[in-house]
Length: 148
Image 1 (spheres, helix red, strand yellow):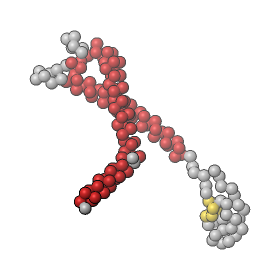
Image 2 (cartoon, rainbow, N blue to C red):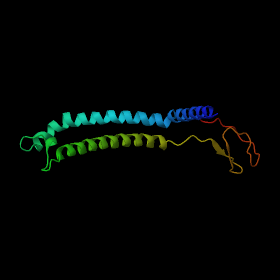
Image 3 (cartoon, helix red, strand yellow):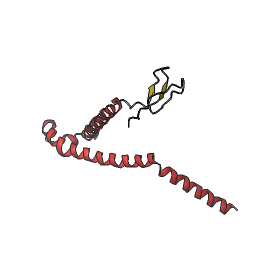
Image 4 (spheres, one colour):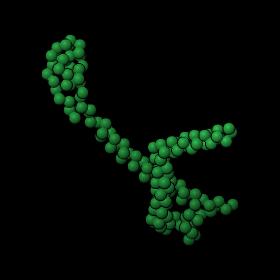
């Protein structure tokens, strides 16, 4: 008896986990994590290979690259500042992307939806566009084709 019950419990657990894992939100989150990691690598490469060579001559102290700066107890302050700079570049890129998406969504929202109802000229009740009689006063109406 106990073996059959534990097998059913295991099968139920696997089925529940499969339903959870295959939901759209979990898959979307996994894709976002992978793309985010790749984007982070791109930003780090951009910072280290393009931005830093331009900044190093300006920030170099005693011939050392600024990412190698340390303060006396051995704290690598330059490495920390480089990581902060990487973060700021990622934040700026995300801000610009989200702003562009929001602008696009606002344009979509600004278009008024097509009307699905009209007013009865006799009682001013709302009726569907294709209606031939008003449901409130039973007046005959001219049918209008719905706008698609």
